[in-house]
Length: 130
Image 1 (cartoon, rainbow, N blue to C red):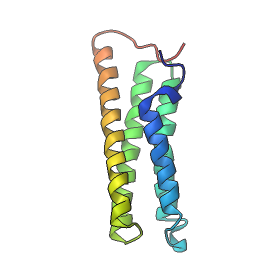
Image 2 (tube, rainbow, N blue to C red):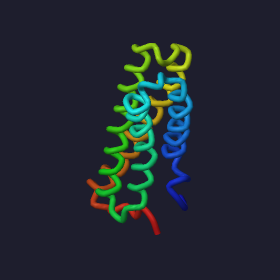
Image 3 (cartoon, helix red, strand yellow):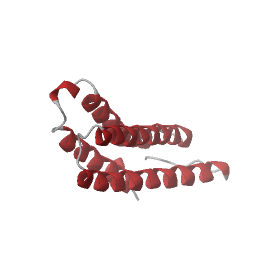
Image 4 (cartoon, rainbow, N blue to C red):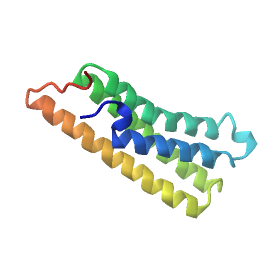
């Protein structure tokens, strides 16, 4: 039984990805501080934050909605990283690992959303917290 959103593997992976993003954006050009650096960091923070917020909601539809927002944010992160790569802010070796981490978080979010929607469609309300 999960005691906290921090027990969710998808939250743990998303949180670790967020830390990676903060680390990698430290080397971005200073003129991107309020541009791509800020945008990428905000999108990265949004992923584990929305997973946590959804977990804290009382209903499955609210939880699912927050997970969809997290999924949208991970897509933003991926797009912004591609831009950073094309602008030569990130080296190819660094981007490969992060892209793999993004795909893993995307896959986990899709699986969790699917599981919650299947439970909802079966007529069961999932208790997301005690």
